Length: 166
Image 1 (tube, rainbow, N blue to C red):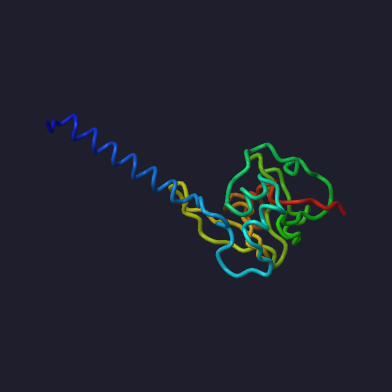
Image 2: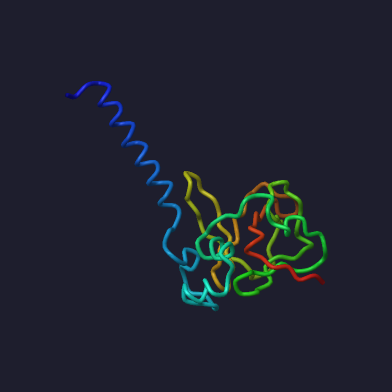
């Protein structure tokens, strides 16, 4: 029997499923989400899995995000260079690092010709994704709430980086 209650319940269920589908569509459950395009460093999915830790693979190749305040690189204060954990390309200088209070390593600019960006529309919002220009690995996102001189905040997953002290 069709009642107002059944009709409203059905509409709510359809809306919830549609919303969940939209959110989940933003997450690429296939392999190598970060490698759309042609990059200097390319590997098979099996090679990436062998070379990276599970956490690095999740972030760099599947566009995941590490939990805030878990990366030791968020607290790294020494002079040096932050490199892509996937291909060892220098991507950020310690001189551009700042404490954003967000729980992820943050930088006001990348090194020249180190990163690329693309629009990310996951999770019902539009953001700018940052990836390594050499291997396509997902690093994090860039926002317009950073300090001078750029006003940018490159919010980067620490697990996607390695650090080499100067």
